[in-house]
Image (tube, rainbow, N blue to C red; front, side):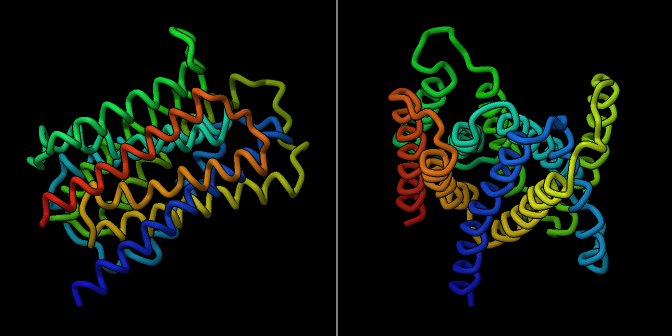
Length: 294
């Protein structure tokens, strides 16, 4: 029974990797044709998810056991989503996904300090590799020449790392409903404020010019994000923080494939090397974690 649950967790997290990429895929399709503020895409995810999770899980609602970790998880997850979707909106979808996937390194970096998980020397080398890879992507290989959208992607990786570390801790005491409901409740409030602010700051925005295609792309991005969040959170009930982070790193390969062959995004030597370092970092972290368990 335990093995079947572990396998289910693996499948769920792998599915989340594809769904999270598709959320940015639809953002890029919409951004290339319509001039909607980036906050609309973040609001679509949270505003869609809040009623869905409440309808399907409200009967399982129980009292919150650990408010501190739950609050940290919710806040970091909201920030990670905002940074992530803005990075895909303004820049390269491929870079946004690769930089977001630096979060396993930040899980490994922060877990020993805050939740008592131990790391081996190889884990610290992996952290260094991931940070180096992120630097190569965000600077384009040039010193102090940062790409603004890629900085948002890296910020999403850092905040997601804190969020995943918090998720593993909160799942020891609280239900999936608590994690998802309060995350989406906070996310809906924050992103609707962002929508109001960006709409007011863009007086020439004409929402009537957006045809059915835009609304379908917006809906598709939100739905993929919601489903990805659900299977990701549910999967972590049966896998460890680092192991789950590594499984979801398959999104790097998905992002590279779509970026090169569908969006024809520029693939520089520094960006390629950075992506390889991030992926290698995640793989070595996974092997190190398995050795520690054995």
